[in-house]
Length: 270
Image (tube, rainbow, N blue to C red; front, side, top):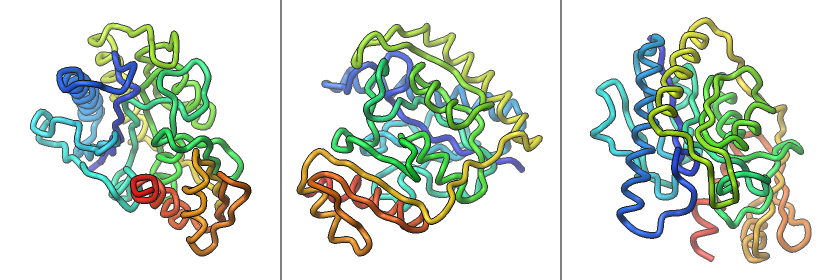
């Protein structure tokens, strides 16, 4: 058996250039997100995977149309998870990142951000980290490597800088932070399927290595409002630096807990 874990976001899918403002637009973007996930699933199965776990990463994490996934795929949906969007990755053999975007502050990127627009900086052991690196770190904690990624060109450049050698697909190029040159969606899906198949075959051969951080892990988190940093400073071990910045040093599960607490609770309640 070979199980593939697919973490799927929406900002890095073909055609997505701004956060949806109305229901018809939202439905169209969810259609494309689901289609790109299915393209990755098709490639994984063709490459030898037997089981697929799909994790919805976006906003309330209820975007993917579950009934349109093949029988071999299970779906994790909903918010407030222990490992952000990487829960159950420890039961898998390989990770795909589909439809991701560049981290906050990235130039020449479509909708660059890190989890939400209230985070203005996030580092792990001194390295700038977006959602892709957080995904790789969580998977690497359990010995699971990342083998494939798709998104805009800025994101692909970002992920290649820390995970060289993985299979990648560029679906669009930024012409502004809320505008892109989008490649044809059918061509994008075909390339995603091909990359997913190649990644799965390589993963079965053991060609990818987990991305692991040296512990203890040092988290630096910068937020938009001093009240957020004040709330986080109530956590034992959190050190506040100035108005909007906090530091925390600990084992990776503890660091992820601090990030999750901010994203899923503090930022929603203050």
